[in-house]
Image (cartoon, rainbow, N blue to C red):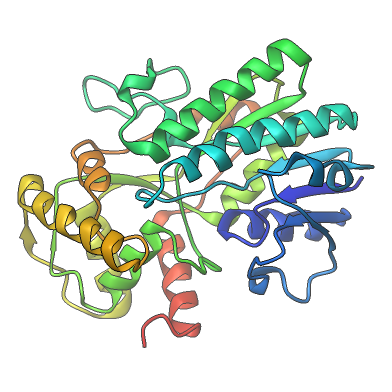
Length: 330
């Protein structure tokens, strides 16, 4: 059974590719001509050149595939042109699903995000059923992923698209080449360049557990259902303390109010836009999101598809080892 994986050169996508190969399945990957293929180098793959934003390139990519893992996304909390996020995350998803349905693909696993889920009023972990609206989405990344998942539900209803949805929390671990915003935070903390923190929290999960969750969703998930692929809830203070213990460095002791960081984020974004330096380390949307703890419950995925996750400290240790081995601490 040939499986197509989008986003295969990225963090989660490359983990999904490795898990499929380990299971002995033929894998085809969709990559743009200019993509950095370091994450999939020397793997026994079939390469399909294409772009989610160019529908004419997708028919050949999905031809003959029985499964599609649509992992690709533009994951930036800040972009100089926000339209890029919607083009990739919303329109790109519609283009790919349309091509897959036309090619009679039997199962599509769509990688959404916990970013599109609601928050509970009492601060308890949210799940797949926590109420949420588009107005609750902070920033263009979250809005684009919310609209993309809505488009997926519309495609399921209108064209019988055989889609199962997974909502990973905050993956960490090896091969975070960019790195992701969370990976950047781990690097900064491990090298002692993060002297303070704000009161927030994340649900951390090992990227390889997320990859396994994708395969479980393919095998056991129900079309139209979504499954949170999470790990362990930790406050940022707890995360930084764990990182400090792993690398043998004192943890930061200073907690700063969110509103004190906000002006710094405004300046950082203006600097990045003016000098084209890429996504700044701190963003306005990131600070706004940090005012609520991103805690989630994976009970549904555990009960219905057999999903499990290892402790967050183990995921942090794997991430730190990979970053150190690949020169990110230099």
